[in-house]
Length: 232
Image (cartoon, rainbow, N blue to C red):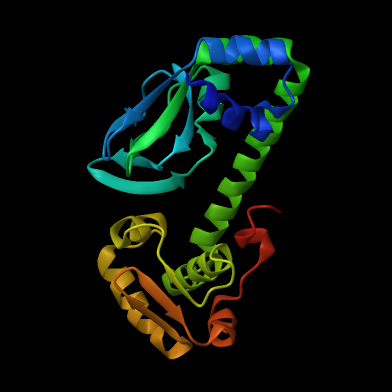
């Protein structure tokens, strides 16, 4: 690892409370690779040999079953994936691939588990991280089961608006095909949903989103912190 990569990892909540000695043991065995876009990093069903940390670029987590593929999440810097498989020493339940040129730190899972058993601060941080992941899964499940496709899209755009610091014109963070998959829709259904949002002041041209009537959009979406706020 390059010396300037270490502070970024150290500042992650997962590692910030670790003793310096154990942290140095962990990064000493790690290495960093730069990957071009569309490179598979892990495959679901394979053993979890490494805990990955994205330090630049972005990585899509996805799953395939019976020739059907769905997008699960997009990991952006600086974030780790997939922690549960590393701690459990179980197979990956998702695959991962780069969506752009990305730098990724690979931490051997064996070392992560050994330090988990020794460093209580790190163990507590792992539990917090897994608890947050569990709550995110519950929220995603509620979003899919309780809302129509139009409501899911409306709430996604409201969350994107907030991430864009309240801008009423912003760019979609992912391509439409992946967005449709993430929201549990076909590309055709997404196109119809986009058209259906026009009466609510939403116009999408390519990847550019313009919201002219936020009140109408919120009335349709009915956002809830128990579904949409991932900090809750």
